[in-house]
Length: 448
Image (cartoon, rainbow, N blue to C red):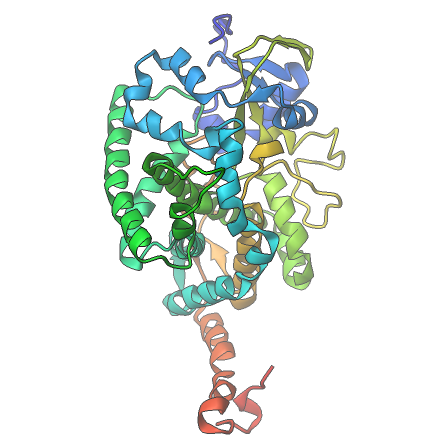
């Protein structure tokens, strides 16, 4: 680790876990870009805040993960004896080629564009069933009751995790957000992480044994039976990456939906525009990703000496934090008021899903889930209001950005109208059972 870190007595330029930063990092990002775009932080890591450097590091083969060596340098030679760190060393997210190539090659088929597009009806079904259950109540927490339910259900479907076991995965996955922060874990946090890994390992081995005996049409079965270049995944590799897929497969989407809804309600003109022009939803999702990214930072390690990166020399072995949220607000790429939400903004290409060989496998799935969730919510609950859009409670993490809860309410007549809109189509769905439609009058609905 670089020992030549900032020692000034003034507040550091980069303090990612400070309350001010957690609440709103974007003014601080702007300060970094203007004054020290390749900043050597008090963490002993370089923070790249401009789009040019972030984009380069994400794609440049001179940078990699080097997870095991980097972790040993930071914690000491015995750290890989800890189940938590040994497990994380098997995450494909932390691998360099050729291991990364091998692991990603086994998983990527489940996330092809065609397969993800085929999930649209199931995603719509989950969203509608969730709203059918909640709408009569007149209020909900948009995070726990709505945004969370969708991606958790879909990734559990993909992994073949039984309904009765999903709560276990949910509880464990919440810890992943903190593990991704670029901070040192305390001995207590390591002990707690070890316990979670050991519990997950016991459960996953039972699941793997079941899928070996009774294969199913799911990603777990695919991985258990997969071979790549003659070698199968070990149980440690299987467990680590199933947990990673679950955590990454829902946490980012939860925050994309939550941050997007919060941004809309903080910008009523944009909310009104999207309601009036629902065809903008696809571009709106890209703008949500740019405006307040669910993923704020990705780390890379210099695999060789870098002579010049944004005016700084980066020695081999040093870590560069790619500040995705900052890069997405760089006026060199988005010259028209990047600090504003504009769902009609042209040429939005956020770096929120990373880049290069580690580009997020589930990026398109997350986009589709958010698109269907937000558009359906606005259509079925047009008068939904947030209890407090200006002062939400943010998660105390930096790498993953989102709110803990987002209470909202709506008027009762809106709920009844929404439910009636779905119920009035039921008679035509019964045609195949009774041979004819039940309703014939103007209130009977239509088959469209």
